[in-house]
Image: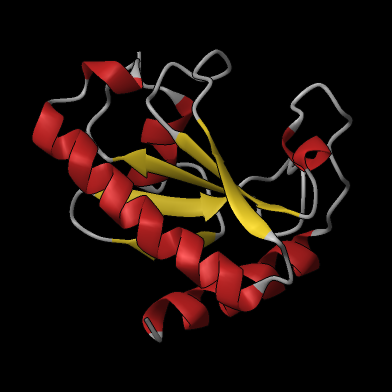
Length: 133
């Protein structure tokens, strides 16, 4: 059965796309820990990140690096944190989260509430930042 991320890649479920190429997709988390929280996924459906072929894993991290730099340019933050958890969706993915403190990457805290308009505006801002790199 296709994961929710595979359905997003196929366009069956909408998302707020930030960046994309032939191998990877970056989109806003709709239940973010912070404004600008992005998920980066390979388009190939693989359950665990460590099951990705080594060169693909390397390219995933290179793509994530460019997305993280776009976040840093577009969202006021001290750093962009990276987390790989993999329990919530059976599809390899990386969380990129703008941080002001280490508490901002605590997945046990309540998620922030964002509107569709806020997500749309943030996606536009991040796409522009990504394109300028």
